[in-house]
Image (cartoon, rainbow, N blue to C red; front, side, top):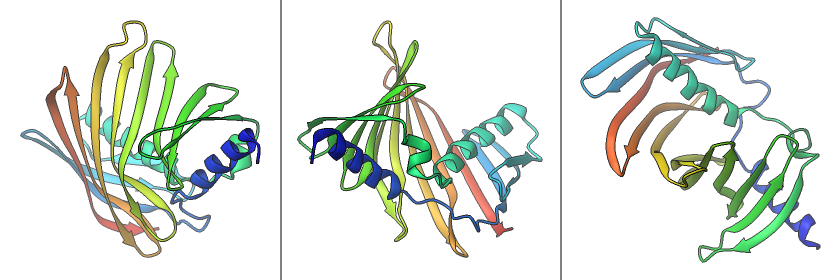
Length: 212
């Protein structure tokens, strides 16, 4: 097998090993509670069959936007898009294998280039540069649903490409539960570090989850 074909096959296997919701996904509603220090905010969320998101009842607009952003990121990873549709026109270049047995793959696309690391048929690192900002997402623990994997513990490191200094690090811990036929997020803890100091901790809690 040639190197480009091997790189493509490794990446496609990891891409198709992710847990995604099927076309029968009915959407769901839930109560949401956000805890940030001594502050607590509550409201409701609804994710529709078409993956659109509604956040209601949250009194603070910035918090409501934070909930929406968090859910949008989660929904993006749960959407099932065929590999050819997402990456059919991309070029795959095989890189080095590191001491953890993770294989580096450079994916060159129409919009931007990204570097990934694949280990045990899972993406364990994403490295992307966007103008003056670069970010690296490292996944340390995943949930095996039996129908695909979901990252459960991961960091996002944001770096200034001009100064090569780290702006911030976000540490995530996600909890999922199976509701009916679908794994749904019930909790996310986000810790933000600036200059290696823990500046904020935010908890998103979802309860009374009802499909449909």
